[in-house]
Length: 105
Image 1: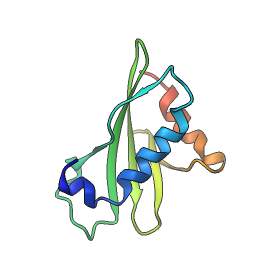
Image 2 (image 1 turned 120 degrees about the vertical axis):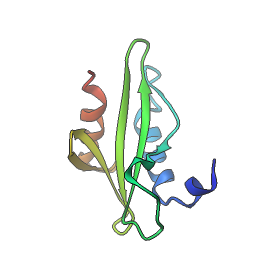
Image 3 (image 1 turned 180 degrees about the vertical axis):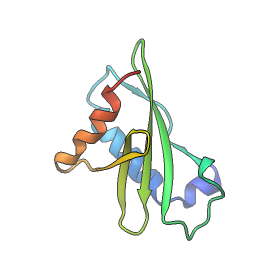
Image 4 (image 1 turned 45 degrees about the horizontal axis):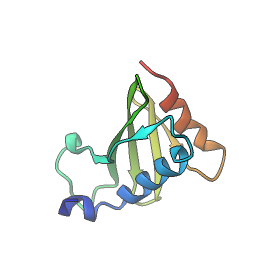
């Protein structure tokens, strides 16, 4: 893991969320959580970190996009273009994770 990723606060939070949701289902395979640096240069004063992770099945592939809000320590998942919803694994908002994952294109 490179030095920038080690300094990112949301990396472990996103990785833990995804693992906790799909680890019980052998149908899904998860890739490595990747820091999405397409949002410009990383600055430790940034308020959000952006991540992507690939989820696959035997015949399908889906890339999920996440924002991690550093100040509030919350995770958002992209359900559609510029449509972000907070997701967490301890209440009903986890449904947004599954909505994003199960809409295959």
